[in-house]
Length: 494
Ligand code: ZN
Ligand code: CU
Image 1: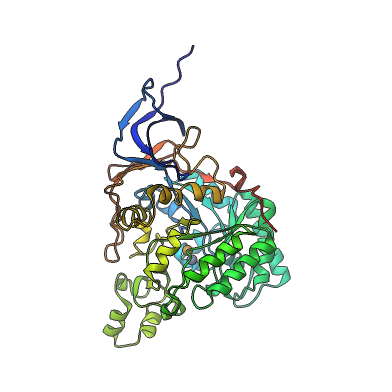
Image 2: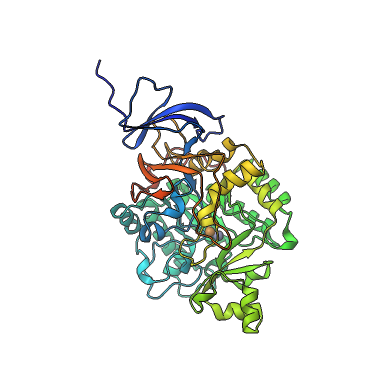
């Protein structure tokens, strides 16, 4: 009998948490090339490299389902902010904004400036964006969506109105070209000025192009405050009319008068789920972050400036302090800081915990990688769930937390052979210490890497080890056409 080839790696005595929610079990893991080849008691096998990880958890690499890493994966391809947390795949193109398809003549308006503030950051066709990732890969796998606001910016001369039928037809042609290139879905940011004037019909008509391709629709809803329930209805309607699965991004009930209302929103999502596919994601913080926007400010108990083109020195400072120093109102200070971004304290801890504890909620960071003083979620989301919310608060078992970062997310986006730790799956994995894993990024020091992450592999290659990045860039741009049955051919109820 020929001897089986020697695995590249054997990880010994791991506490395997496989991403399905199944209880942890002790096993060895063999890895050859980009795949996990065996999980079990592998006493007869010797790897080219062997690591004893006794006492550590080995889990599928985390999938960050809500990111704005569209440009970061090209401009900062080692992606330390994510691989330091154990993230091995990022979903880009959220909240209505993507770097393609768009060929802007001038810098695009907020919030697109969060991902690309110069015309040369953009790609006229989606295929060009994915090709750029093939040529210059990053450390992580990329799953890319098309932004509805990006489509609008490319076709419409004014954004403060509904698109005409001929503009919708043009947007749809670009959307279809992007899906053909491999985009996995279309996101909206109906809250934001570039899309706020878009009626439900416009989105539903565009979203109808998603279903035949097997793509999904995600949304930063029109309203996450007083009218959050109406926004849920609008989201469900778009999903039903377009016959497409919907993902509610960063679900929250923002503003003090709405605190506690996840007690209404989650049962409403449950009711919708009985007749259509609805998913959601959440980040583990009571503050959000986006461009400095007067509508968001109104609902916030505290605002921290994350960047300002007019006053770069304001980054990291409270807006109220800046206003006091200038002897003006917060609104006037916000005006003087533009263009700018901010962190907004708008949520209630009990709501955040309720959404996180909801069994269908995926974890997504919503981190903003180009901000000078970013929200700590960029560097801390996943370790914060596993350290603070699992170990310290006891919100849910470790196996369940891992499932919400891996197996559930992979199933939702149709990522075949990822998000699970088993023989045959891609070797995207993270080894961490469940006793010490913790986020270290704070409001004051937002870019401190997490602790407790020992080893992170993407497609079988080590990207993070012993507290430092390796510089390897084994990530792939994953195309819609490569997705499995849960993705492209997934059944959608009427
Ligand atoms: Zn958003
Ligand atoms: Cu977002």
